[in-house]
Image (cartoon, rainbow, N blue to C red; front, side):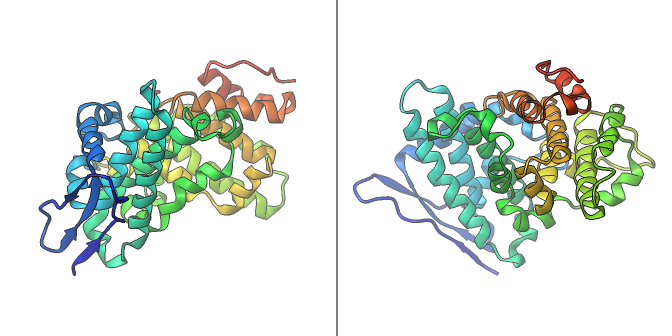
Length: 335
């Protein structure tokens, strides 16, 4: 089945070129890009792509050539141009807002393309969807984090625990999910050992064990997702049986899995600043520090942990001590 992907033509008066790469016979991708976008694509290959190369493990079955995917899938190319423009907004002393506006435009077009994909195209777009989901996460972390003030938003500390950025990461979840995680994680749990620090995570249950049964279920579900995410990010683990490490436990996919599979009930409790929800999210902030702190994630781990501590105060501080240790933050002592 042929797939037609198009983008809006650029405004009149702007020079543009048609981007029509060679593609497999089942797909025809056409997009109109301005000349400045050629500069962004060049910047991706020279600078931006290298700055985020740690997001994809070259030793993993998921290791892919992102730019090659961009020549076959228009939404990936939009994601590439968007992140390249964000990199320039982050590093260039002038024209920061112009680069940010360009990034927002390309990101919007990329999201629109993904949401228009038919289910019959999913099998052929698996790697591309995985790539775009990571580009979408990078875009979200950058715009709600280090670049938030360029948008006129509040400080990163005020935005870090807002459900808004989580929902932006989840915007493409229905389209990505079936390709993102080929191995059901409930099957993986029986084959893997949780990380050495897992006892700190299990102790979180003390904060909600006396809650209503429905609330306990919400928090337990989020906590299990968090424990999986932490184990996936903590390095080599022992597996039961002779199996190959599946691509769905790559570091950034683990973060995506946590964010995309949180229940709406949990996100609502986070918005309500319920202590168990905030404590769980403080641990998520702490494990973000296990990732290399590059330009788009700078300050996130510390911001989440510090914000939770400020909101909850000293009564709950005993449960977030591990988080403060991980991000080298000791702003509140437990009672």
